[in-house]
Image 1 (tube, one colour):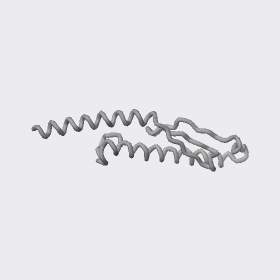
Image 2 (cartoon, helix red, strand yellow):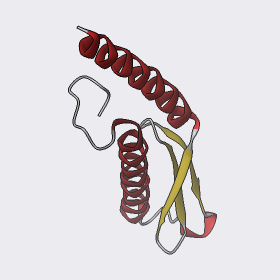
Image 3 (tube, one colour):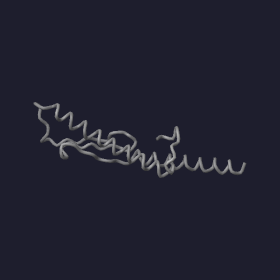
Image 4 (cartoon, helix red, strand yellow):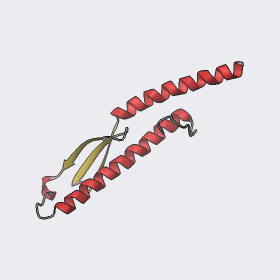
Length: 104
């Protein structure tokens, strides 16, 4: 029984550490761009978008589709970086274990 108690204590500690990491990730921001930096997207590592910056030089009312593509590219890239960062940080806590229901 002592082994089970120790395991449960370790699991609780891991859960507490994961909660702290998730809270920190919700504040951590990453940036990605498209169009050579013409459109920048900033994402938080909890999967939300913080802001988008668009260089006024790429705003062409006659080519809205290009701007849409640039925005989509920047946002997609930012979310990929955020997800990678989230996975890396959570793996530090879980030592790479795949734990169902643990936010991964």
